[in-house]
Length: 235
Image (spheres, rainbow, N blue to C red):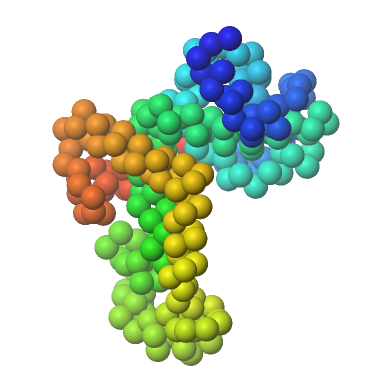
């Protein structure tokens, strides 16, 4: 077999998600993403099952694999017990490993996810954290959020949250030993190595595109991938 299909076969998600696609299209019919995006999980399953290296490479470098919301609705309806959502996960992992993600608009946004959801999970123990959400990068929050952000402790107290507090409660401070455990999980499972690879591949892409790049959220490349939309993703 080819290099790419061999890599997919090494992923347990591929082994569990691919039995024998009969091209019935049930997964596409039930898929919420397929309703709005130029996305056809049935076709992806056929392309991957074929073992065609060129088609798999197109998937790794293209937009389609980043449209899936991983809701697994496909799993509930497939008559052959396939799980296209798991195949998408395996494709995404290979794309990140080989740096193919930098060849597509949605793929390049993996850097944004790494520096927000990924790093916030390690730093705060939450994938989304109010303190880190500012209208600089999330202008859609509007001026009311600017006020709320400046008065987070008061607002959260009125909402009944234990924001950055000790003990139990919503948005409580996560103890350091728990944060250390989260870090260890990322380390042992290869998550930290994956983060480093996303950074390095993104840096190389920024150089290729002639854009400024640093470790912050305020550089030319980050701003470009965070805000650019070619308008060609939806049906």
